[in-house]
Image (cartoon, rainbow, N blue to C red):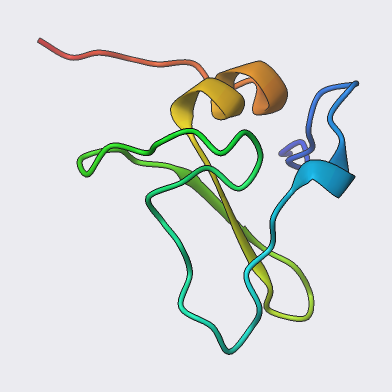
Length: 73
C-alpha cells in the first residue's frame, strides 16, 4: 500500500505559480520559491486535474514534500 503524495504542514498552495495547460512549462525555476533548477536537476513535477503544471526545486522537494537526496559515488 502506498501513501498519497502530499506536502508537509505549512505548505501554502497559494504560493505555487502554475503554468497553464496550453503554455510551455518553465522548468528552470521553482514554481514555489522561484529558485533555480539546475540543468541536470530532477525536479518534482505536478499537474492538476485541469493540466496546469508546477515544478519544485530540490530544496522545496526536501522541505515541503519530504524527499531525501541519495548521492551515489
